[in-house]
Amino acid sequence: MMKYIIVCLFFLIVSCNFSHKKEKGNVNNQSDFCKVVKDTLIAYEIEGISTEGAGTKVNYVNGKITRSVTSIYGETGQATIIYEFETDKIKVLETKYSYKSGIENVKSDEDMLLDYEISYFIDFKGNIIGNEIPERIDFFKEFKEVVPFEL
Image (cartoon, rainbow, N blue to C red; front, top):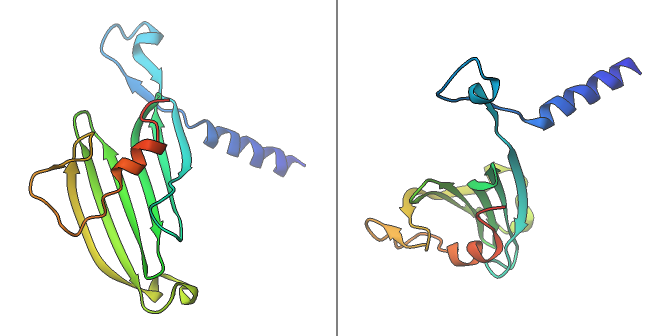
């Protein structure tokens, strides 16, 4: 019974996910010294991108989007797109894999081949910042329709 209580307390502490942030000001005043940062992780399904499915896990800090990891599955391969939200732009990290044979035969990462890994920036409308990248997976419009940027 004691082990069960200890395990439950451990998960409770870990799930609270408190982080402290130092602030400038009078260190004698506790409210000026530390602030609690609230992290939230929400999963969303994104329709219309792939017949095999697409889902994203989105991190929010204090109610604002900070990062998302989207997995897109297809008959011949899969891709992972990470959006890292900055103040005025979004960093995109995109990785695409092809299956060595059909999707039904994929049991591990060894059953896939890396097609490419690219990194670039987009604005909050989905437009590329810099040179055009012809091979990229552009689903920002669908992402933006499903995922709120603020909670």
